[in-house]
Image: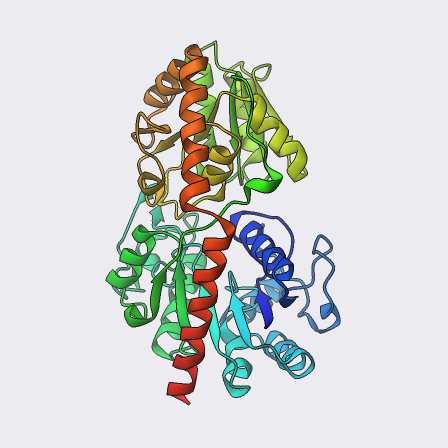
Length: 413
């Protein structure tokens, strides 16, 4: 089978990109021919069809000049260059299926028109809530918000939920309204939901409910040996942005002097987080490692006692949790989104209230003070991913969804 994976970024920027690259490698190992399509970017993985990628455009930080703002606004609504690039790649590669990931803004659903014209079935993994929430995260000024469900896309303008900006919030609402009411995502035959929570939110938002399929993520244990002895300290692995709640982890370290925290990852909040560590006088106990190779990350995981996931948004199914379990770590996480689906409290982790640094600090310190118990909980987590989140199981179910999509695409003509 020839499979074309599509994502705006083609490097390990976050969970969506990690999943895409891992499943692509898994499919190659299984004998399939796999290629990538995305936006031009210096950090991209090597890609056969890079000459046909649309040019790079950045929204973090947003452009400040008027011309840049106009180009960005046009690009997120409809990108003729992305559509032309997709058409060229479809002609040259002739895939059996197009598997889409995060295509919003930099690519836009414009790439779906040539996919439909070519008669290629399309599947899209939903890594966030963009098709229900114009600003992706169901957050308004740091608080959970579902004001746009279902299809009340004028709400962002009223609430200014994108960084307090009327212009940006209005544009986000207008973008999703246009794409929803014109059926821009209509060519997608199946939408993959990694968590039951996300699937339920998509149904509530009337996002193609008959095309939703729940398929959890996977983790490959072959390249991730479990720790052999109890470890020490706390580790966080993921993007550094406000919704991830890493500031709560810094505050927890300030409350409990016995906590030592390693933070792996990068993102727009890194500078602010480093300033917070200095303000709380914990810079000697909270260490920032930036974006690091997988092998180095695995070393951090196996050396720690516990993984922290202090998110303040509806997490979908973060790979960090599965990788933490794979390394033999218990997970302390906020009780939001799909996180409670992954963690059995007291068995392989602890669920804490969101936005509560005291509860987070207490849970982390308790596990840190009982390394043998934490080690046994980590072993239970690894047994869980071996049983329920194996690559083979995931791939078989994913290819079944591909087959469904092919039937669905033929039915729609």
